[in-house]
Length: 81
Image 1: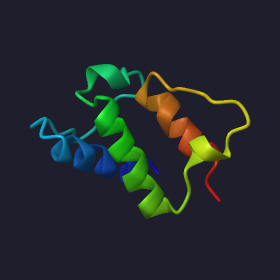
Image 2: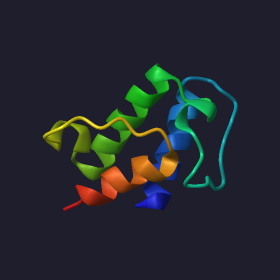
Image 3: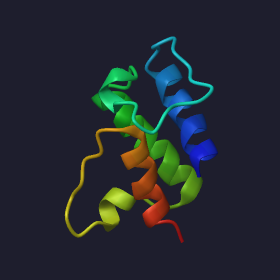
Image 4: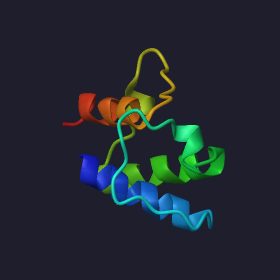
């Protein structure tokens, strides 16, 4: 799951033309400090939904907004089929 998310993370960064790519990202990396803005985050969610065939944020009873990469990853892992 980490590999897929990191791949799509980099793809989203490329689409918003940030010129930043990550070979690896620490779990405690703050999402807002990675160069991913709100548009990039929306692109990332769409790319992941296309790849994984689900959007965990639509499946949640209570909305959760991750602040770190580790929290983001955990949400996707929790809702994986």
